[in-house]
Length: 300
Image: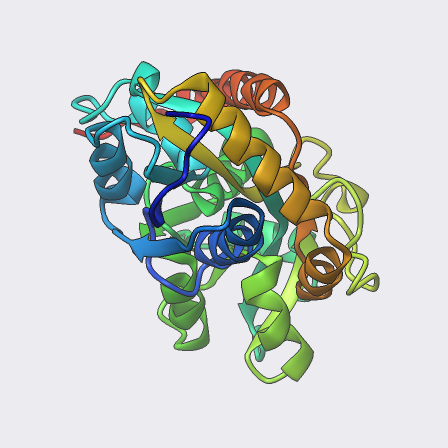
């Protein structure tokens, strides 16, 4: 079966609304991998419950190699946060990393804050700032809780269905700020009339926007996190099929036409092997697990 696979279209399930980093990286991977595999890859959005609706859907799907999840940080931390998670960690198997979009802390363009230090200090002096997230356990949620637990900020996480909705909340002045993926934030930053960037939470400055300092440079040495997207399979999918898909995504992420386009959008293509992605997921679950405990990030 693995030798003949795929013989029909494959589905990538995005557990967030269209327009966010997870969705945009999924579409780039689908486009490149479908060329390698010779079959269409259809991207379907199933948002809700911090990624749980789409994740549970894939976890319970037939392990025939035609339905995969586009995973993110929340997918691997939901089991720590939600008391009644609809799937177990073992129900979803890491296949391959797609890429990562460095996170950017942003406020409205007319906000009085010009860097992350000013924003955090001002939150401490107020009753707290509302901070948009893409749901419980999403990357922006972790950014907020890292700033709260490690640096004394007073940020109140406000969940939305996707990064694009969070971005709209900032522009509409419904919240004071958010941490958004560079691919979503940069178009609004470059225009200059919608977002003001305060810091990138990645390990280095953005190649496409080098004037923005990192959080580390501003004294937040432990605030290092990005929006990442990978592929997970429902338990039971043939290892040979997962290897074949991993190889196709890896090749797609190394194709110059894809890498140039993604880097211009602020995305770092990664790809790699199943083993590398498994190691990443294990390490990230352990690292973020400490934040979950420190912040008491639990919900029913």
